[in-house]
Image (cartoon, rainbow, N blue to C red; front, side):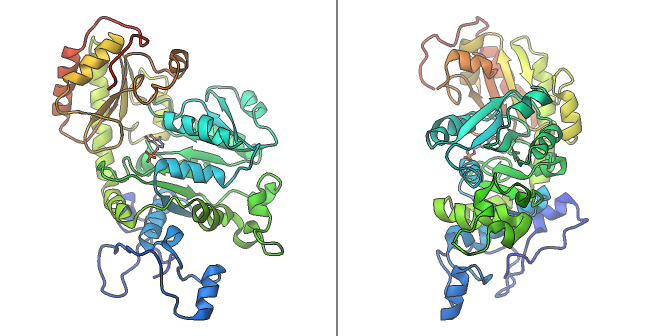
Length: 448
Ligand SMILES: Cc1ncc(COP(=O)(O)O)c(C=O)c1O
């Protein structure tokens, strides 16, 4: 089996590609489902072949930290679905974000990011990565072109954003950010976890690198943690050698550079052969089997996720206990036009609600639910709910929370694929239990 044997996917429907793209036939037994290669390493048939594999001169495999065939199949399938040149899967969404950025930066380099991002990503950027010497600049996505351009310095290595930022659903204008990034000679990196390749393919709008937490809708059943990085394979690293020395300087003195050897595939090659090899964020192939099973039904699940989310968001908007609903599929959302452009099949299945009664209402709402799971996570077949201000955004000051739109009554719902009437009945139970008296978030609370 080789990595490049692909299903003949051009022209095939998404629903076909999610089942077949990147597959290879098991040469030993003809197994229809790709085998789980639960092995750490691979026997070298000859002395010379061992040396060739280490030198990257053979397509044969050496060690599963970077080269597991089950993981490679998932990388090919996701790359196909996103319209990229290639992809890799890693141990978590956070691992994907970390290695995707560490492959581009050195101490003192900068990343320019939209300020509305998943809180875990913000903490990674402003905490661990900042302490390691990477500088992060944040701008509201609505800032003018001039402000974005002015924020790009000679040390800026990429613009980073999310297709549908979690949890506020403030859909990003990917085409504009791609244009601004490319005019400055830097790539656009997009975390597209909440959209999935079924709802939006950022590469079609100019993105260069797409990231996923595959723990969410891609795997889809809440059973595994994983991440993925997909390279569009279009960015011209050679045109900007001074910005990307890792790709344009030889790894070994006198040897070829990644750009010389792999051209526009230099970033993906660097990720595989240096970043993942060095940092080791390997995902177990057993987890990847569950990811591949999830991907096979992605389109079907997403159709149901977005249909349920749309109906429930419309229903929530009519409830007196709900002050506002963040869902870009609602005509009342300031992001409705963006969603129409970038997410024609549906605006995802995160629905965030601000309860009139604030923190105490959120507590009684969550404690009043019986079907919906009160937990952190998104993209499960089950509907999930969480109070943002005391959990995911709990480390922020009240001022920082409000700046990020995390009001005391904000509850994030990840709408599942259960019967919509049953989800609505449970929401109704939660709202009936919710206390309409508003309280500030700073009131001491019991840990949840
Ligand atoms: C948008 C987004 N990106 C990345 C992550 C991190 O993914 P993981 O939990 O797989 O590390 C999350 C987790 O919630 C997320 O919502």
